[in-house]
Image: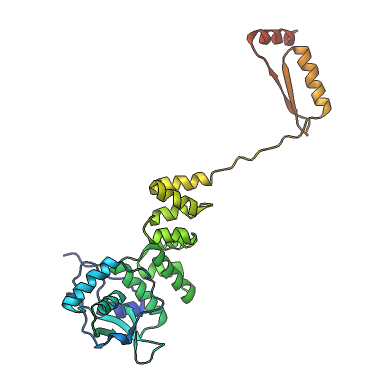
Length: 292
């Protein structure tokens, strides 16, 4: 049997969480659950205000509520002592279970209490959400931005710690440069992260996003649309007006040769003379004059 790859070292906080809860997909909760430290009154447990997840799918929450109503909370929540409420707890991982347990009208819930810093709590909240039920691209990007702005993490450190490529994190962070209207479309699933990335360099991403939704454009079509908007603009070069002497020479030559003659004279003394004929007869006459 192939040896299971070891997890990357994600720091003390994540290691503490993984010691109790295996977040790998496809593992039954009952097979990896740690014994809860205790059961606490549900009203003494509070959500983390820095939780990166802001959207909870109603259908998923309803299914989880039905499961908890029947079987209870099988997998304990990870909590820490609440800094703002002595004697109470703040959720580190498991806010969906907490919300569903409230709906199921449970009075107590099982918890594992861990002493974690703000940095570790936010890291674990992001990891838990990404591995359990994917954050949308905006929420994931905002979580990374929090880690960088509040706790001084670099993109390189996040990539190494979270097992992501640096380009993945960089591309997500670039999405936060989009206007709120486009980010709302991304949150609501009207456009994908690929569409949003294509709109980042656009001059008017909101207008293009609305066009993408209206026409049902693919990511590749969106890229072409954004590129066309930023296409090179040909500058009109205004030629200086010809002086009277040049115009006089043009008139004299045109009269002598019987065809239209134009002269483009440059400041350095060089230039071009163009002779325009309308038919072969004019060309023959011109050739005879020039050969004399």
